[in-house]
Length: 223
Image (cartoon, rainbow, N blue to C red):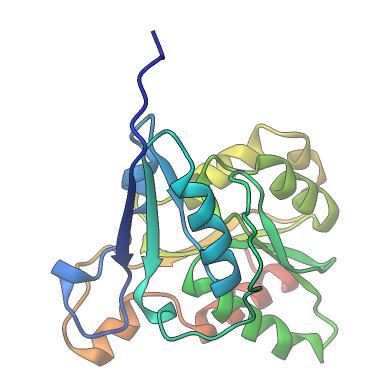
């Protein structure tokens, strides 16, 4: 009758970039999102990691805390005082007006680097980090796409059945769809096991050059 609770946090290293091969490099957010009852958290900064972990610990239901391995050595400002970040509240990592990128984990930082580069050319990119995939802050994403009229979803997980499709379906069935002035696009990992070879590993997932190419194609109208 909904009275039982399972207060459990599962911290899960994920992602490629460490030469750990296929058995240790998957991005499992989408698989976890498909299991009703699980909350799925994907922090991208030290600040977010602490605040979201506090919320996860106090949650009465299972939380999968998905941590990209390349972010473990990242440094950032973290307040000493107690704070928490509520689930289901996305963060606008960069405000912009020309195009919306929805992304998470390490891809947030790759997208930010590309956005900074393109700023000098007058291309103003907004970057939305959901922070929690379940529950998802749909309204922030819808509002952003309504404003910019363009959407690019970037994630490391392979394209087939990736969560980019869920974001695109969200926009297709929302008021934001009427404001689109370009087809929605997604940039995701290749549909291959993550290679052990470092060169091939890098080629299997989106890099900054790939993100830049997709942004330019959308802005130019190369559909």
